[in-house]
Image 1 (tube, rainbow, N blue to C red):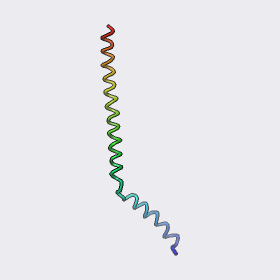
Image 2: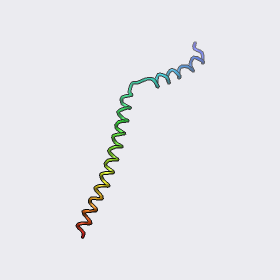
Image 3: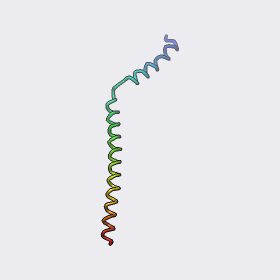
Image 4: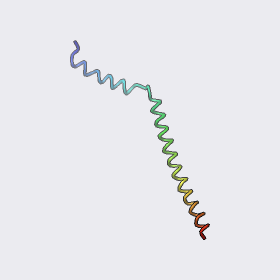
Length: 65
């Protein structure tokens, strides 16, 4: 029969295995890369849309004169 003290060490072993396990780490890396690419795309689309808005306003102003 195991004593209660030995059972306390079992979760620590599980935590150690969880923190040192490298299985699935590549999926996490891919998710991080996808998030960074998404942020870059959103930023560039925002900048391009602001530039296009200025161009459309200039053309609209020139046509209305």
